[in-house]
Each structure stands twice: as C-alpha cells, then as structure tokens.
Length: 149
Image 1 (spheres, rainbow, N blue to C red):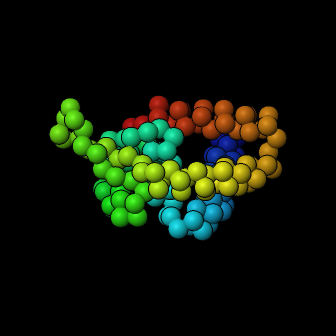
Image 2 (cartoon, one colour; image 1 turned 90 degrees about the vertical axis):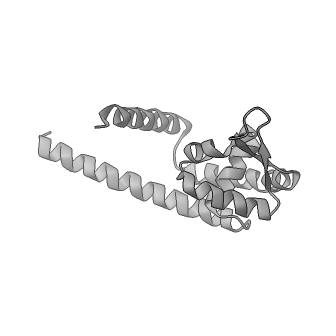
C-alpha cells in the first residue's frame, strides 16, 4: 500500500469511527432524555452512583466535560434533588458532590434499561469482536497521547 493510500485509509477510518460514535451517542442520548435528564446530568449521576462522592473539581475530567460546565450541571441536579454538595472536613477549598437517595432511586430505575440499550446497540459485534475492538481502540488512544506535540 502506498503512503497516499494509507493516508486515505486513515481518513476513512476516522469518518467511520466518527459516524459510528454519532449513531451510538444519538441513540443513547434519546434514551437518557426520555428519563428527564440530559446526557451530562446522567453522566454525573452515574459517576457518583458507581464511584461515590467526588470532588467537584475532578468530575469534569472523569466525564470528559469542561470544568466550567460542572457547576451549572451540579446546580441543576441539586435543584432536582438528585445530589447535594458536601464540604470536605479536612480542606475547606474542596467540595464534594454526593448523590442523594432520590438520585440513587432514579439511577436504580433507569440504569438497567440504559445498560441493556447499549448492549442491544453493540450486538452487531460478537464477544470476540468487541474484545478486539476494545484492544484496538485502546492502542489507538494511547498512541495519540504519545504523539502530543
């Protein structure tokens, strides 16, 4: 394969990955919005549900969101009664987000359907193909970190 052909194949791969991600994301977001949340609100609640209390300053990095948006999302979730802010007893500069019982009940109710929907959408791939894809995408992601200029 020539370098030009290889470059074209890289571009094609980028487009195919982008379209696949867009299709998956749109389907999952529809499912989330049917439950009265936007995707970012769901991501924050899901993080707190599965990982426990989180410092507000670290949530953005864990769910791939700009830190400036976290305050807005946390405010909305707090108003809905799904989380609360808790001051760190050891460091006054740190505030934790903590999921409330209402938030836990919501995730208990909607997460199984969310999980099943993702499984349905991924069912076009066999178990072995999923594992191979996971490994290839990890390899790609890690190689990009190494290329940072």
